[in-house]
Amino acid sequence: MYLEHFKLQELPFRLSPDPQFLYLSAAHSRAKAYMESTVMFTDGFVVITGEIGAGKTTVIETFLQTLDSDVVVAQVNQTQVSAVEFLQSILVQFGFSPFKMKKAELISTINTFLIEQYAAGRKVLLIVDEAQNLSLKVLEEIRLMSGIESTKEKVLRIILAGQPELNEKLDSAELIQLAQRVRLRFHLSALTLEDMKGYIRHRLEVAGAEGRTIFEPHLLPEIFRYTGGVPRLINTLCDTAMMAAFSTDTATVGPHELQTAIAELQWVEFAARTHTLSSHSSGTVAEGIQPGGRVYARVLLRVNGQTISETPLRVGRRVVGRTTDNDVQIDSRFVSRHHCQLLTTEHSTVIEDLNSTNGIHMRGRRVRRQTLRNGDVITIGQHELLYADERISGDKAVIDTIPNAQTADEDTD
Image 1 (tube, rainbow, N blue to C red):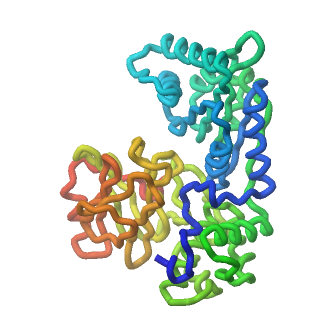
Image 2: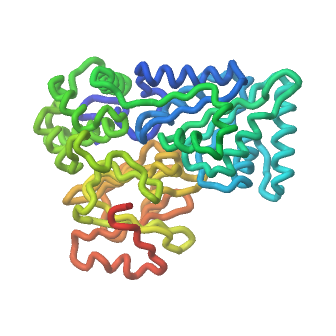
Image 3: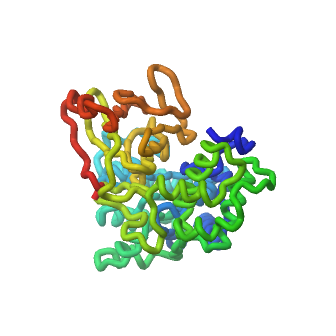
């Protein structure tokens, strides 16, 4: 990696949410302040929306680190669930084993727990990330829970965070009662050019730059044109540009390295894109990957010997993780929110751990970063990724030997 090359202690532009790297722009500061207000007030709940990659999850993680010990938190990230599954998820966060409970028992257990915590002087906070995926039935359960109260006040504080579609859902005729209980709504917008400059400087300083110039200053407006100020896209472009500088043994990122990165990602200017960070029907995002480009490789997701999905790899980055904003989602407690990434060029594909808890393993050993070869098997928790390289002769042989393969749509529509 380029850490030693640039004399850094950490990777400055990782995609995984790390509170240490949070740059508090004015918008991010307001979002965090609104979250903090839920602890102080119990009259309604807070809704935070933002485009994919705007930094919602990082703000949430930072906010959680500031909470006092008297705040009990349930954080739900898997939101494509039934009402019963949602209630079970909450109780699991509170330390219960609710999987044999019927709905009435689930509701009763939650009510009793909330009243007990209030009587003990503790505050209970429910945070739901990716809340735009919640069904109307689940949102109705949230409304009912928000009404639980002692003799003096409500006993459950609620934060809903999600993509802009969440606002549309809350404004629907079916959820009028729920919308009336929303105390604050805030949309987390992309960074301005000036904020983006501060964002890049901040992440480099946290990583150990110590004031050294790594990106030539005149490149920053160009970075903004291609990222639109979206933090996740900034991370993707800056990381790729630093890799380009490392590969040519260049001390700083200049115009050539930036253009090399843009070409590798096959990006056009942000304003010209017709498919910017939008969720596809699978609920995933292919960052910077243009539809219709050549497929250089594929990864098959397997569990218990069965193939459950297949993902094509074009030039660009695919992220693997537990939550629905990943390109390859693995719904498992052994998998981190953003677990690892697949970086594909015309010549190779590299898998890189994103500082996950349980890591990635190949041939019985844990690896941090590895160039993949046809037929490689990557173990992630209880799942496996089988890599098939289509740059070589006989490329389909690996996939053809695997039963029950389900091919993902080529354009991830």
